[in-house]
Length: 256
Image 1 (cartoon, rainbow, N blue to C red):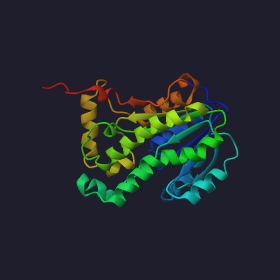
Image 2: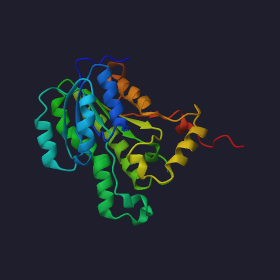
Image 3: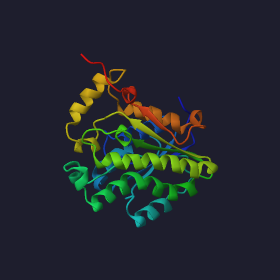
Image 4: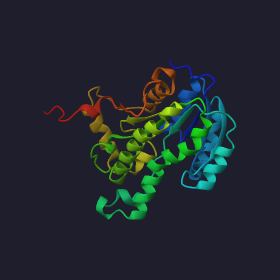
């Protein structure tokens, strides 16, 4: 187990108690890290009841990553060094999942990529000055960023951009001893996944094909995040780490 005592983790993306970001926040807190939560305004009613249950919570505050004024106001309240940044933000307008990729409007495409991908760079623009001793940045992606996954559509493009950001930011921030990695998790039934058609079928198929014959839990992802946050991963950066029971290595599954 990593020892994160004395470290501070900034977690973006908690939307409910089923969020991957919530599981990561709980795991980091359990390992001794102080937690700062940043959330989108539409989740305020959930977060105001959920956040106080978190051990080592320093504070929680709304922060819309698409609004410059909220970003500035949020980071102005941080009065301690940051050691860990968790980016678990994903969004695309519902209409983008209902139409062919060729019919997605420039406005909807811009929203999906700005919120789901560019936001990582934007957060680090503000967070890096708060990381004088370096640290670990962890974002969440999915196999759809590297391969075609049914019904993922424009989000696959957004995740591909996010993974490119991971590599570029790892190179750019490396001299500051800031590591940047992504966890590519298998399918998990979260609020965001609720917008993907036939998601229950995706879960069943994943379980039947993955070498370990199992689905992934938020706790599995949280444990991997805690490893990447700790000193045991101090020489790992720019990587996309798969936590998917081995599904991503399979080409043609067992037939018959």
